[in-house]
Length: 126
Image (cartoon, rainbow, N blue to C red; front, side, top):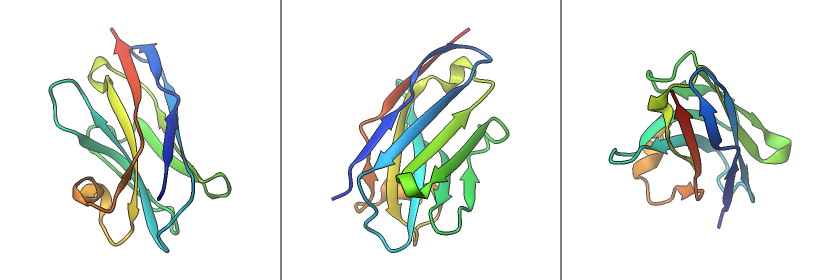
């Protein structure tokens, strides 16, 4: 079992920045992928960014590209999501996900063997 703990959410004004963190209890897949998803009230969950643990290759949703950076500290089992130039449309619950790197990007969302954190809330006010 892999446990993921997110932190760093909060309330900011539009134009501000936040850095989310997700720490995994362990990595169980020989080749793994970590991703951030978000879900706004009344909307479906959507992918934000993903990073492959071994290669550090990254993948971003078009809606956040240029404003968001995903990175990792392998020694700390932690993945980060730096978000800049935030807008009210970024308000959502943000979830960290860990899964097998055989999947591509945000395909993790639909896989039964993906692990999820409890989420951290981000509120952006105008």
